[in-house]
Image (tube, rainbow, N blue to C red; front, side, top):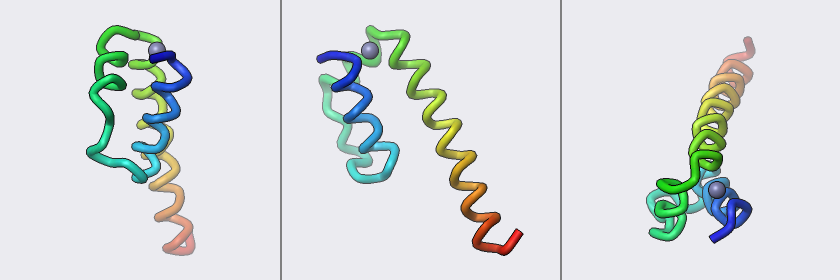
Amino acid sequence: MSCVECRTALSAELDGEAADAVPEEVRRHLRDCAACGSWLAAAHRLQRLLRSARLAADRGE
Ligand SMILES: [Zn+2]
């Protein structure tokens, strides 16, 4: 598995398209690849920010 394949699978999971369905090979790559690990942490942070921005917009803030 390459970093690109790993991150593509993880973006689907981040979007909720494949939650709970992260393939074992992706998990294995994450354990071994520090770069993808920090990419995922950053992606989760960004997603939380986007989600709270969207909630604020829904409230008209
Ligand atoms: Zn990687």
